[in-house]
Length: 66
Image (cartoon, rainbow, N blue to C red; front, side, top):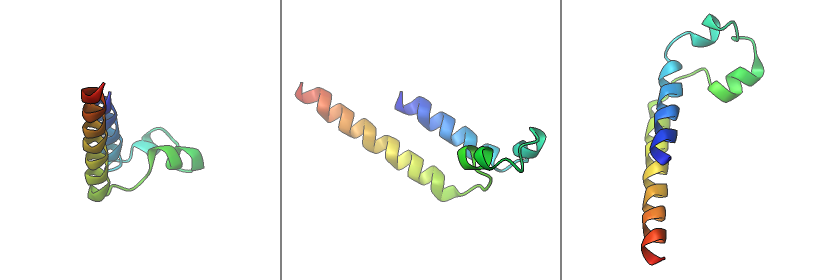
């Protein structure tokens, strides 16, 4: 599940490199900008990856003790 979330977050982040909000005519929609974002940041990809690695580590330790 964590990897699926990572793939979705990467896809959304890379979509921010394009004009996909304009293609969907949502460039002025505050909620679309809030949910989908409108600027690409490489640091976001690093943060998403670190978060998923952390979750996988926690889950693997949690299931190992059960």
